[in-house]
Image 1 (tube, protein in one colour):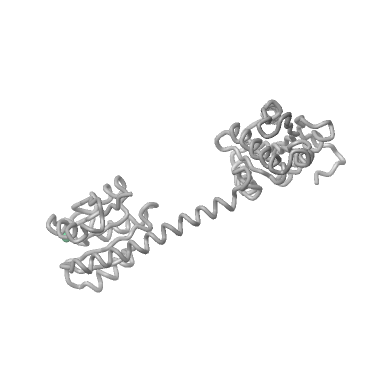
Image 2 (cartoon, rainbow, N blue to C red):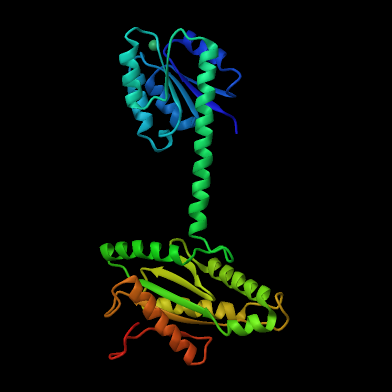
Length: 312
Ligand SMILES: [Mg+2]
């Protein structure tokens, strides 16, 4: 990516001098003659570095810096502040307080400006690397390695925040808990590699049906979980039935000849009597899943509260 710098100064001469000094450091130079034009250029061009004068008409360097620092994209961009007037200590302190990364008096030595730019670029690049690594770690922390789906931890985080929204906007949440039938037998008969591939493919089938905003995760072992929003129990059961059918009709013979897969699904909705939290919802779906299993598998069961039976 081309390294872009934004040069802000009301003097064309000063901009030329900075440009000349930094010719070896940046590939693209964007120029602005006051703070207002500079804010516009910053938004449009997204430069990775800024050198700005303080004394300018309309919006001066100080106001420009504080505007940039209040913007999401402008929080970490290095900014060197230049001043041509006396009383530099006070100006320096004001600039640093507003978020300037460095300060230089005009006229400056080219070598000094270059050295300061290089040092700030080094720090900026390290911070960007760190940010990328953190984002990767965050992603890994909520991703199931085998299927690439979200994991159980993500499921609970996402479901809890949806529950809060559901309370506020009073919409229903449906939970579908799915379990691959006789998975142990698949592992025993075809081997663990085949079992892993079954999990991957089943996950991919579910992901292909998942709509924007719905939650899908590998819940553990051979269990997958899904949350649908703003849906009735009938619609949720119909969706579950579609998934069941999709898996049972899918051709798994590439993994092993004659291999066919079915899933049992339990469906529950929130809110209803005795289902007031995400934990209740998952327990209720689990109860319904258990029913699907004991009724012969490869089927969908909708949770219905049975008096006298505890949820857990
Ligand atoms: Mg000026």
